[in-house]
Length: 258
Image 1 (cartoon, helix red, strand yellow):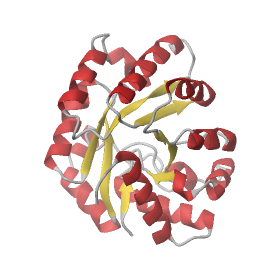
Image 2 (cartoon, helix red, strand yellow):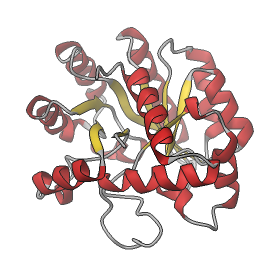
Image 3 (cartoon, one colour):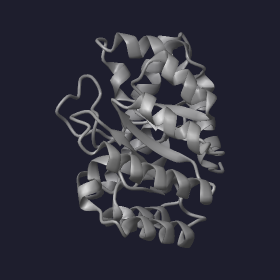
Image 4 (cartoon, helix red, strand yellow):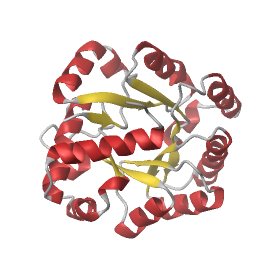
């Protein structure tokens, strides 16, 4: 199998400190390419450097809804400058989105930052990487309003089948990660078992979102291979076929050449 981890944070200290070993183990597992999204201005330079240093690491830049307090009003202008300067290197605007998991007290600010980043994605003809928790219907409203030509990926999708099909209709792929390895996630596992495979991409969100059996441990990109195996089992397919189609999907949405 050859796999692309469509969402991992290789710049985070716990992975950065052991990066050579992380990449070696990933390669041994068949995980050969990596999309690394930025989450705020403080880590954009690090993400860009990774892409420049490694030919199989592809950077994205964005302001994550959970990191708004670490950003200033001027950071959106800086993001536009970065996208212009690194347009050929940056494969997406992300990780951006809406997170209303704990409360909606920052709802209006999140919406404002999200929509301004969606417009940047449209201006630079980039796909987006979306973080969405407890806000799928609200996110879909924004996407219908903006109408992104390049679509993107809904990271760690956990919504309903109806929401999934609406994202797909709007040109988005859905990120499949460690959540499907938990048998208790029956609804999500059932949804991913019959959605079109052409609409799915594999991800780990490492170092976060550990798979079943690794609770409490650091997550690693190598485990995208385990996600592929579980998804294949749920769909009654060969893991190699799941890996091949999801790899093509990821390359398509981010315009990555082989």
